[in-house]
Length: 85
Image (cartoon, rainbow, N blue to C red; front, side, top):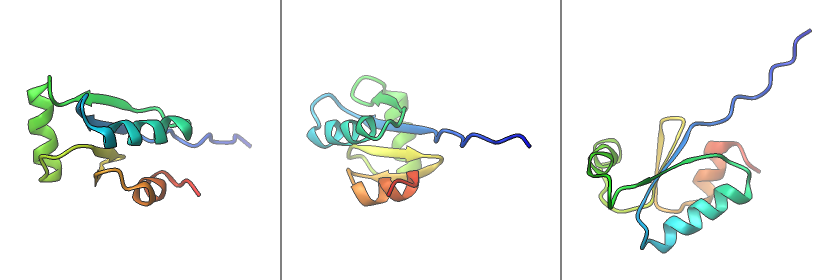
């Protein structure tokens, strides 16, 4: 019997270099061993537009986990989306 390894979640963090909550969110993901793509929307205007289209929000952080959008550093929502206890 072949055992399937759980597929890693696809995580994107839309952030800016001056946002303290962005750093908190990224630190939380790192502490939990979650790999993520960090997207600086201050420099990447196309990504900023994409973030606004997906979330309806202009503020950061916006965290996308397997297509689910989480606005702000909502620790419980992030844990739930990642299946972390």
